[in-house]
Length: 209
Image 1: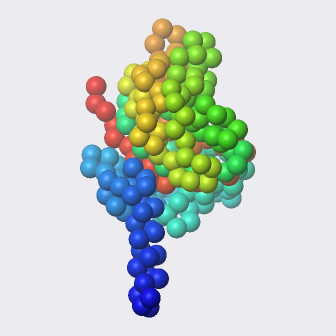
Image 2: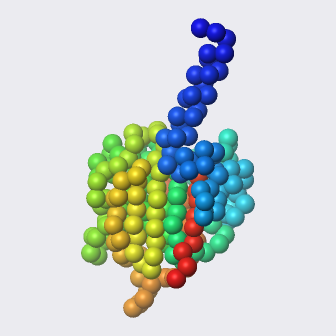
Image 3: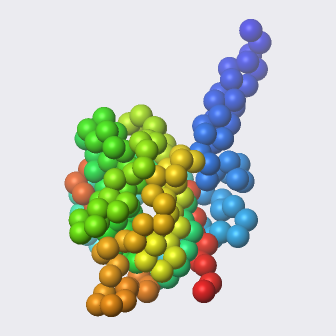
């Protein structure tokens, strides 16, 4: 084997990891949004996020990845959003539990597939009708590997794809209800639930009514 072989193999390994993420594969570069989307996370710092002094101890950026140690609180965006499409790459550890809040309300569920065989992506707080509470199919990758959400929110209806598989199909998100209507705008939050987490490739495309 030539001296160049190890470097070549390393490059192939990195390329394979990038292609393995649907969000990354669109551009081939970490944290670079696909056409029509904007990056909520720039890969360098928390510009565009509400990072309190308390949370700054626990939410860090390392090598283009948001690293959370499980302490402190949730991380919200500065801006509020109405209807949108959202990509999020996430990685969780054994026994982990988290979620993505939409318009400031809970949540598209994230947790350990070994502990919760139904898998991630359901609208866990839909306790009245239970529509969308559990995902249609389990689509998580093994704990410790990157997963990708594609989330679409229109009105109060949520559609979720996890790793390319449909897991929630236009289910009303009960926590968005407000009287006879629903909350129309709010921040996106990366949920604190006492477990270490990692996030990257967070891209959004607001949808005009």
